[in-house]
Image (cartoon, rainbow, N blue to C red; front, side, top):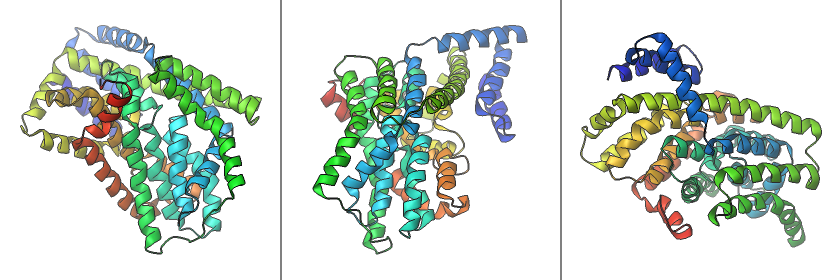
Length: 435
């Protein structure tokens, strides 16, 4: 229990002083290891060994490949075609540009796997149109913030790959399929609020109509981009390739699409995408390495088991414990991005969830859903800053319009929490398994 105390205190103090999260975890783990090992040199050696061995994973290869694919999508013309396709689908609704923002984030987030990329691409494209049509810009930016994390639940999702690794090998294909319904629920919850505002007459009445020929032309232009989802998920479900191999296919397909089909991925853009992917991969892999070392320390010293026993001792009611989990994760998620959140909290809370009889797949969706809401909330929400910047809206004006959307998303979260079939039914039907 001393190790757990050292981890908690050191991590909290360093985070308070603005030290990057990966260094907070690494330093805290090293000091806790020093309490276990005979000297500091041994602690350094053990830390290095654990970091190296934890990164020696075929599953992890998917992360840089999906990051590269997402980076090329952002500059390869895919986002614009998906936004145009969203206009065809929901352009006739009152408050159409707000609905288009939400649907575009779900589509682009699903193919790119990045909430920040979705918020940047969709926001920068639609914000000028929204300003021209007299939309309330703080509300429009808030819609972008609240809907951009949907793609982290809708596969292919890098977050679910990270959870698969840290949870001890929960099948990635099952997690991917399990994320569809919760991800759609998250998007629909935002669209319900937009619909309510439109019903009350608080949204612009301008709609975007297309002739049949125009709709067909836009759809045909978007099909190659949408086909990426079919290739990835179809290949995984059919057993043609693994999630890691699917990431390679996604990167290759995105390159061909942007470079030779849409012809919008220039050599300069390709170099920039590759460099951005390399930086993003380095950040994620450092986080994974130090977090896996921390997880090993918690497991080997018995700290994780003691913490799980203490949490279970708070109540014998699984519904109450799941309520406490959600409240705690929602609060902590406001201070952490989704990857460190998954890496820190999964090894702590998953053993408790399994003691309560909760499927690792179901719990993976619950914790990811919580942290998806967290990355859109102040003070550290990454999508919050991106959406405010591209919409040119002061950050302080976003809080009020965000609150009703967060309330509806939290309702959707609790529905997913207390009705496991919302996560587990689709994998059972499509794959014939739930874990």
